[in-house]
Image (cartoon, rainbow, N blue to C red; front, side, top):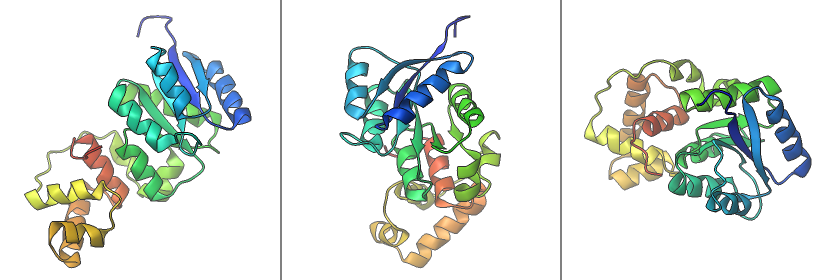
Length: 218
């Protein structure tokens, strides 16, 4: 990035007071400037198609008139250079998995401290990824300790690779077993083997590995 050039951020949230507060906060961060604000995904599409392209979009998951899921998918398909940082009140595993699958580079809670928002923006720009400490501790059970570690070569069987792809869907483990024409016990064996090989402890960890290694279909 050229000296003096600020990182451009778009803020998308249908709650005007929160959106304005976030924009003001981001503008106070050294090296950052808010390029535009949006109420929903349609407004983001309109801006991007007018070639108003930010570096990062801070994207609320739950918005009316094109929510965060649909918006993240559209951005990833049409403007993959734009980094999406998901913003939500929810910390459930399914929401996190879905946003990461759809191309989000990070996930942060709305009740986070200002310092952590700055850390998240920095990490998304510099490392191409961020999960808050709260999410890491509550959902991913220590996976954040592995994010900065170099990937070690891992040998996966054909069935384990297929299982990883299905894990990135919204199917239950029982449904995955049916898709793979194996028993639920066999699927449990694949999962436990991958937990050990990949040094993760949850389904979110499996999904993150798959995304980082190009095994997840968006």
